[in-house]
Amino acid sequence: AVALVELSRGWDMKGVRGAMKFVVPIILDAVFGKLFPFLFRPNALGWIQNPDRSFTQVRRRKRIDNSVQVSMLASALFFTLFAAKTLLLLLFRFAMGLAA
Image 1: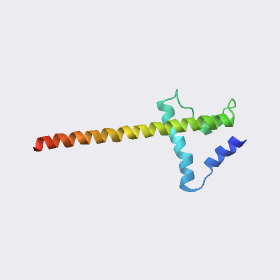
Image 2: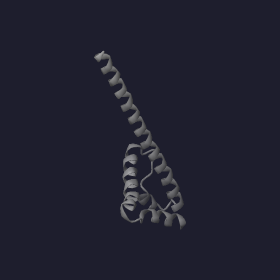
Image 3: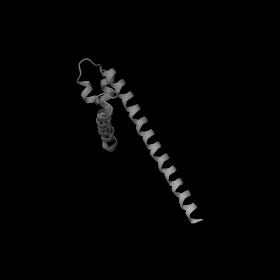
């Protein structure tokens, strides 16, 4: 029962923050579920409807899924920024070589 209350409270927040805590995980679950179905489970609302899973199992699994999703997004952002920085440095060096 505690897990169900905690899941419900997370969805019932008011304002933009509440909407983001409800909508963003559903969108991320849908995107990552299609890209990596072997790794990620359906969103919490869909998974709660499975009678074979307890609310505690759903909450625990979604925490893991969300942590991995955030890690993957952070890694992608880091790689993109690193690649952009490297490209800009190479372009700058190339331009300086031509100017000399």
